[in-house]
Image (cartoon, rainbow, N blue to C red; front, side, top):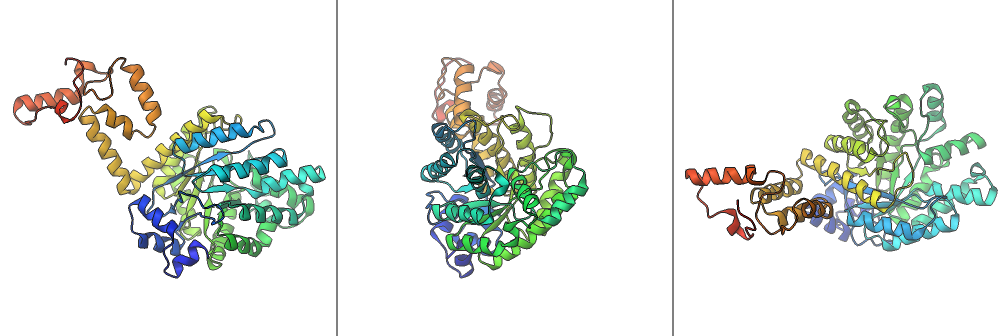
Length: 453
């Protein structure tokens, strides 16, 4: 029985209880959101993730990190290091997007599933494509049966959610032909399916046999992530007819999935100018009946290779504030190459900053309490607490130690930025001296005074 079916029958699963604890909500609140389809809990029983995550309405905005080998970088040890970097940086989910040698691809998927305590997603058409290349010498020679074989294998192996580009239909392809885009199709899964459709002159099997996909997903409680194969790859292509046509189809498939008892979320655009982001989120929520929205960025400019984790964080914060539920990280290596572990860590942190900013805009109580705690620690010059509360404690501590040599974090002193002109210190002293504020001084709250004022 799927999480959706249990929720509809009034049952509260262990995963729902865990999500409720993480979110500061009641189990009944989580159950109700899952039953309505506005929240999903990707939790394939064959994976048994120790840290199930809820994605959707009234919950904190979640962050996904992509991993995976490629033809040029088939090193599994490197992927394991990236996985650990993503988890240590606070990723809520991982996706294995491996390509290259079929045996290495399969091994990487098993490695990620075994090592990840959080939900794991895949894009089965990638593995189907690399197998077809090895078997037939051509990706487009793939038989539809081979695609279904891989989907079954991923579901049975414990994958919690799969990206499936069901909205890349022959009609959407015709829209694309008439659109005159600059970047055409930038979705790898979308491009693979388009190549297959054109070669065989047939409809996308994921759309044509959506009922078969639902049967597999229901049997294993795999959450479907309806991929955006027509997403824009540059600002000039954003919110065009091809993208919108696909979204209309995905909205219909959301209804079908829910009727079948299958959890479903919808993926969103990649490159979108700032003024169009909120409209994109609202359109998705309206057409897809409140299904959780999973966005890549969005990236708000095309000209920042090397800094696209920043452009994506800007767009992710705005999308999250408008109602997006799940942010796929972007690393500094986006558009340039496969990221290394440090770039993975930077991408996760940037996306988490965006997600947290969105949660503040959404009024999530846990997010506001976190910021209040940091504000209280700053007022008290409590550096140890500030470092503990930092979204990236590792980087915060490194900077503190480098910028304040010889000063312990438990010293209640000014940092080297302002020194004796520290506003926090001066105002506290002025208020105390004037009699407005009577206190013994912040030093007596647990910290040490390590140098004179």
